[in-house]
Length: 509
Image (cartoon, rainbow, N blue to C red):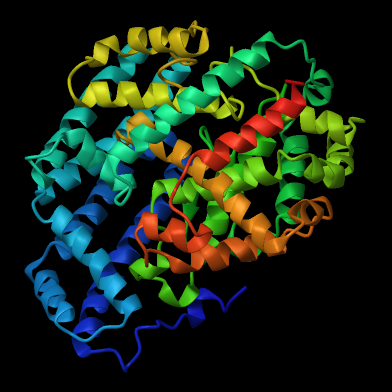
């Protein structure tokens, strides 16, 4: 790893034009405020007592208002104009482009709205936790309605002449058009639905060695999570593992923290969640240290971020070569005697009747995502009222997956996302599609990737991702980054080929 944060030196060097240095000095303060807000968010989800919600909301709101004020100020506008008139190389020009995009996007949003929205998000997350625990959507509905109204108001302030949902979508995916996402969704539905139907009709009986041997206490499962993080080279001096209601990652290239959660009856749930979140952390940790505080030192989009977590979860930890190298370690922690093949089957079983997205298998997962995106958009556009959400959710679960939740906690309250924003689910599917494309390109470059995985020599995989994805930060828009990394535009072809081959072999299709 690079030098500790106390030794951090910016790459905004003295030879840069003065106007550029002034701009990046202003932006660095904004980035540091946002980074501090991220630590407060992590604390709220992991460490903060529940009684701290009201104060935390005020703290986060003050930071977001200050950030907004600096980002949209006349001083920032003047600094941008001056920097754009300077003679800049490609990297510096990319930094200016990204600051300009954020400035233009936010300058019409009232500071009071930013503060109100941030405070309400903090409040909503606590309300969501309590509503989920009580299995009572009605308890959460008023907070969700207020969040929807505030986010629509913000979207209209940004671009009153465009659909609010499209504007919200661009918060997470600024460079992948919504139309392209819709095309990918249609391609996936056309390929996945018949494949799932074939699997349901097959008589294959995959092994379940870990579920049968349970239950497992938290300490046992934490030991397994720590063991796989050691194998993945997750650095103790720049990360930590904790537990939260919903697994997530928070941080930057110096401090990328992950969380997981434990189910007594299924240790693979925590195991895959831990690897998934490590993938997110690997992206943050792979960003260039010297670019901290610049757009080039920040991740690009939710879809690119998700490609990293889906790569490590699905293309590494759910492969047979991985279990050929790791099964003995898992057996030691869990007190089981699974074979590598049994472990491989266990983490790849298809469960069309599963109700929970984060527990969904690699195929039906995307039907969960499409379902959410459709409801998400309908709420924002007023086609579905807040009160109708549980009914519409259950109807779509029945349509897409043939199963109906018996409770709100297992249904529309299961995800934390609606407590903070809308148009947040697309990145998961974009990430899976991109992960398969990156995996294909990596195998073309590195050769026998399966041998590296089998031997636990995972450093070259992380290094490849850092070289082709992480180190660029926000230098390229999404389409250019994908071409830079893989040599071709984003396509669902590699994902569909991958799942057809993998699950065809597993289920004897």
